[in-house]
Length: 239
Image 1 (spheres, rainbow, N blue to C red):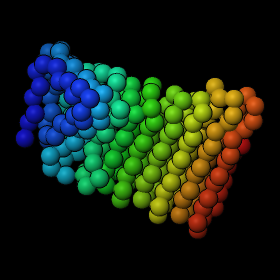
Image 2 (cartoon, rainbow, N blue to C red; image 1 turned 120 degrees about the horizontal axis):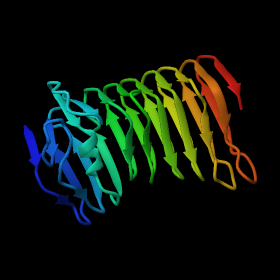
Image 3 (cartoon, one colour; image 1 turned 45 degrees about the horizontal axis):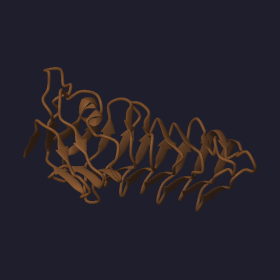
Image 4 (cartoon, rainbow, N blue to C red; image 1 turned 30 degrees about the horizontal axis):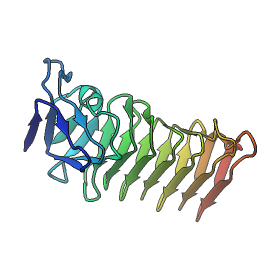
């Protein structure tokens, strides 16, 4: 089904849920850009397909891919600051989630699916609240993920491949692969504006490879670094 909202939608203090295999917020100028319509509220915002096999694309413009819920750059910009949290996908979603460019949220955000989650098309970030990416049975692959003064949680059943993860302030980074390995290409950083450095925890069933530095330094003291491999090797460049 197609869900079309040509005006603004306010959830007030209640939760707001949008369910549809093709959700259009506002109207398009023909180039896939959102022209009007805002999503506002103070509760939880959830956006998910109706069918579990429909994929999700975030950012960029609507490329017309079939069986895909496109939430374009313009539609993402219509999501106003103030939601208690934003969830894209759901626990029983069996398809993939991918980004088509830089994607920035202004509230706590969660991406979740049983399929693979890929944000390598650009930086994935939030300016307020924690950032979570969870693939219950698949893989997670990212470029840079970033938060301000909040935690980063990345979990997958299979391999996790991360470009870099940065969480400023009193925040933590937790990366867990239940059955696979974890690779970080360009480092992990937390506590950049914190008096007490925060913690980095990486756990995997197989190998952990961190090519960049791990920085948990704070103004007063550094936080903890915990690397745990159940059946593999741990290789780091610097801590």
